[in-house]
Length: 390
Image (cartoon, rainbow, N blue to C red; front, side, top):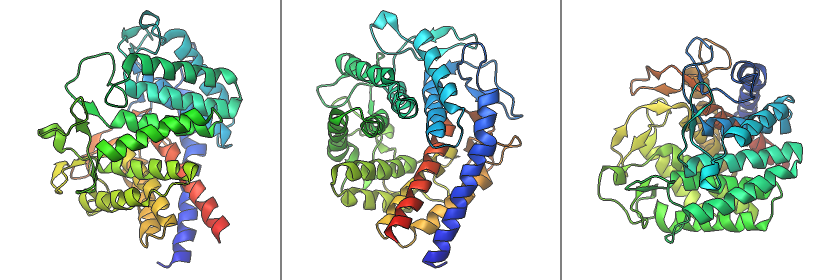
């Protein structure tokens, strides 16, 4: 497949994924996923496409789906999305604030939308920041940026660590993870892009420095997931874990940061992408959930979101001349449809495949739509950049 053919195919794949979102997924989740009484979003859809009315409901679902609908409205994919996002965020402010803690949000509601877990989790809060960034972009409601600033100050006071970054939450752990910091970087960049000011880009720089100093192993060219409290490496099973999907996600984030600062991030993005493919890809082009830095498969299952991160990383590497990256992106969109966006209900998805590619989890958690929307955004951006370059 030559470059022109690949570019044409990637354009059709972009339109294919966008059509799935606009024609199927966004209308489905808006009609079935939202509680009409309070505007909140349910946790997931059952295999038959009906909403799960028995499941507990996480705060991160509210944040991610507020992002999804705000972004869809901003991009013209689902104009009604602004009102949906506004309703979700209004519910979150009314019912999710942790007043006893003096800031931040709770973690989980029961099926009646009563708080059942008031603990606070850094990962959840990263997505609340992201949701407010995109809600401001579509609504121009300054209250969204004010909420983000207040939340950032609270996280620094309550969870800031002398070793850099933040602790996991207000609960005890014997580890620290790169994952919530990755999403805090995403939120900082999104808020900077929304016009919230240079301090957000400065904070993003601090997180990139943490990646360079702690998360990334330059000898093995991998991203590790779990660390000791001072970010020292771990000599146990947790310390071995490498997630190829997160390596791809960092390719996207580091390039985003480089675009905003004028810094060249190639020395990290190129080996992350190459090693993620070398260690993590199966014969069908799917990425394993977890491997070791030596290439042993630690968890051979394959989740939907990992494919979306491969798409994003591939189109970014294609911009820098990787000879196979666009073809990999084209195949990844095919895999997304063949293995995950093939649920009986159009607009729903299959979340998880086993090592043999049989269905591991037939549920459709709402949280996955965030990844799919981000992949579509990056595909469109790539086509715009490629067209401008030509």
